[in-house]
Length: 78
Image (cartoon, rainbow, N blue to C red):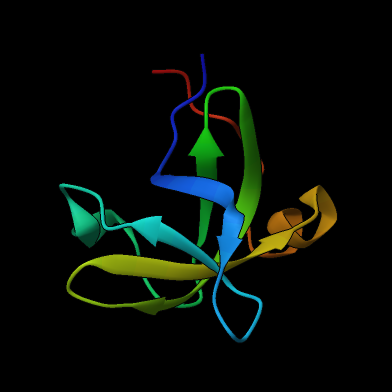
């Protein structure tokens, strides 16, 4: 099983077509402009974090090639 960094319903987007995820218990692992894995074990995506608030993380889904450009392509096991 992979490690999901951002718990998110990948059907939920805001007015800017960004996905909205729950702020994790340890948000220090996330940073704006960083790459994370978002979704749920049954469906997940590479995510480019665009905004972090007190309660949510806003991100865009990206392809593996873009994740590789940012230096992250491994799927950490939990």
